Length: 425
Ligand code: PEP
Ligand code: CO
Image 1 (cartoon, rainbow, N blue to C red):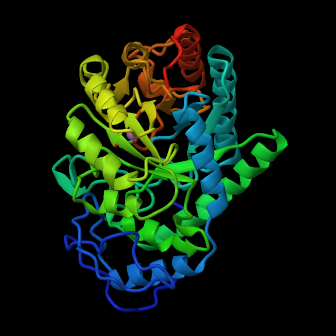
Image 2 (cartoon, protein in one colour; image 1 turned 30 degrees about the vertical axis):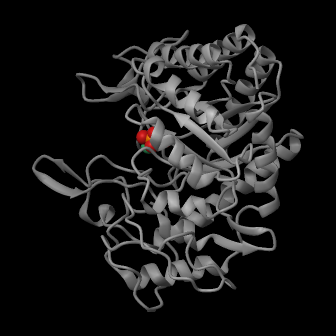
C-alpha cells in the first residue's frame, strides 16, 4: 500500500463510533449554529483513534474542493435533460477504486470504455449521453458483515481504501483515518487526468461516488456563495444499505445542493420512495434526484412499476436509472463472487419494459466496469467461462464487466433505446 502521509494533531474528540451523527451536512463555515436532531449513521468505520480522525478532517476542511459548485449545477442541468427524456445517463467505473489501482492505464481504460459505450448508446438512442464516472473518490464500501473470518481468524471487514486495507492482516484491516487524506489526494490525481482527457476530447465528464463515510464527505462540504455543496464529487449517491429514512446519509444529502442519487433495492416500498422524494427533492427540481433501481432480473418487472408510477404521480421529475449489477450477484461453487451478463441484460430489458409500459423515460444505466480484460463476470461475445474466472479476477469488491462485456451491454442498450416508444413526459 502507498505510504500514508499525514501527521496527527490532537484535537477535540469526534463522536464515538455508534453514537448518533450530527444531522445535516455538518458544520459549515460561516453558518449559524442550529443544533439539529442527531441521526443514526449506518456502515461507519470503527476508527480506533479519534484524535487522528479529528486532525485529518480538519486538514481536509482547509483544502480546496475537488470540484466547483458551478460544475455541480451544470450537471444538475444535464440531468434535468435526462429527466425530461432529452438525454441519457451513463454511470460506470469500478465497484471499489483502490489507491494503488490509480494508474494512467486504468483511468484511461475506464474513460475510454465509457466513451465507446457512450458512442454506441448515443447512436441507438439518438440522444446526447451524459457520462458520469464511478471514479475519483469511489473508495468506501458498505459491507453485509462488519467482520470477516478466514481459517479461524476474525478481522474487521474491508471497507474500502478510504478506511482500511484489503490485505487480511490485523494491521491492514484496522481503520486508519489518515487514509481519508490519501483518498482526497488520489481523487485529485485521478480528476486531473480525467479533466485532461475530457478537454482533449472536447467532452464533458462528471465524477461520482457513494457518500458513505460521513466524516470524509462532511470535511469536503462547503458553504459557497450559491449554497452548501459537497465538493468531493459532482454527484454523490446513497447506497441500498444506508438509505434509512431517518438515517444520517439521506439527511446529509438533503443538505447539499449537488445532484444526488439513491439506490432502490427490491424491498423498497412506494411510500419509502415518496418520502425520499420529499426529503431530497421537495421543490421537484428536474435533475436534482436520480433513483438507481437495482432490483435483480427476477424482481424488476414486478417491483419497479409501482415505484415509478407513484413517484411520477407525486410530480417528481427524477432520473430513472438501472443498476443491473447489484441484484444479480452470486457466488460460484469455486467461491468467486460473479455476475452473468445474460442476467444483467435481462434486468436491463425488464427496466426498459417497465418504462415502455408506463410511458416514462428509461433514463440511465449504472454499471461496474473496467477497460481491462478482467474475468470477473461470466458471458459475453468473447465469453468468460466459470473456468476463466480465476485468471484475471482483480476487483477489490464486486465483479466488473470487462471492456468487451461493457460494449456488449452498450449495444443491447442502444438497441433497446432504438425500439423504445417515445416517453410521454
Ligand atoms: C455499489 O454500488 O457498489 C453498492 C454497494 O451498491 P448497493 O448500494 O446498490 O448495494
Ligand atoms: Co458494487
